[in-house]
Image (cartoon, rainbow, N blue to C red; front, side):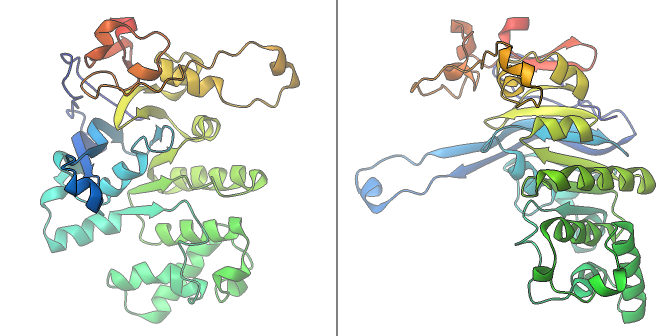
Length: 347
């Protein structure tokens, strides 16, 4: 079970995390990352001010060991930026990230090696995330070499075992193939094996099945679930697809324009969405049942060209229930046990 603990804050303030629970593997507190938008020569000559994109703006959450937190939202909501910040691919402007009780933003070189051995990533694209000039045995074995396992025979044994765990058979044949000789599902299994060989505590999975055929997605998610149970792996699962999120996650945080607008147990959030943005996401999920065509669906988004005021609710310009007070940032409220929402409708 993933715990996201956020205090009830005054309007306009950011979310906070209560990190008293010693079972938390990852704790993110008030994380912020803004990007400056480059200006053209003409814009510079015209004296146009530099604008910023608030990709991540005061995000807080924590993940308990052996559980799965889903970060969900549309493209541009800040999901992948959060992943890059946690992996220290980019540095935050503000906030803190604690992993296994250690502040990762203050780690030295030796500490970073420890951190990167214990936190691995599965990328979205199985086609571009693998080096086409390397054989599978070298691709999966590369992290072992980087982290000090120099003996070739030992590395190969670990790699073959990892390929067997992700069900790439016959292992002896697959190991000596190149990525272009494999299907998309097989390539993603290679990516999972590469993340698995270092026996990490946390795996960040960024849309790991979005580029795969529908028939393969369930197999990959089932494999990841089995590995989670077998190795006590903690996942941060990033997706825009709530149907796979429900299958794979324990708890969920809904992101919109760099902020968490709703969080809670995944069944509670999907069965009883509180925030208008979450309601719109749920309504947009296609259903295989033909009778669902007859059910009324109300996609709760107001189509407007208005520019939202970033000092208030980010969803204000698109929300059908918008009120004047929504021009101020709503606090995060616990509407029911463990189910939080940032919306004045529930004040």
